[in-house]
Image (cartoon, rainbow, N blue to C red; front, side, top):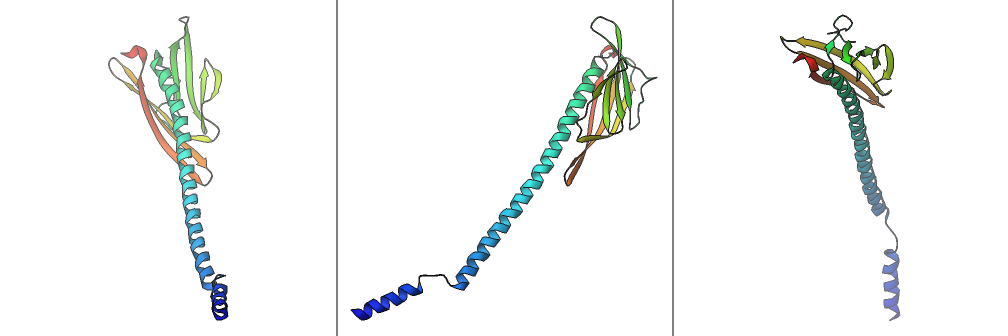
Length: 179
């Protein structure tokens, strides 16, 4: 019986720890898994930054386009003498009627990297957030026999860390009293 106890204790002592090869295989598996997770995380982070940048661009463009199109639709006419049409840094001057029936002038001005709005030569401020820049704003006036249409073409840029996005936006509207 004592021989059995000695032999059994010997086997038990051998299975008590890990061999160097087992430890190296374990470390290799953990390292590969960790590398895979880091790659997935970096890829997700990059995709998230791209989507966020695109979302900021789209929201900025929607805000500006909605304002411009809404004002075009309620305008009586485009002042062709004061407007700068068919160029990158365009100016659109709209003749409107206020709530009391008096004339008013509304202007959209592309100046540098932003768009300004003014009413009756009073600056109402910038329409773009500070992290978005305007590359191009073109106003095109299309006149028919009985109607006038203004086409708006805009290019916005946003720098998002290491990712830069640029997007073109287009819209058009018919003036209220032109049809």
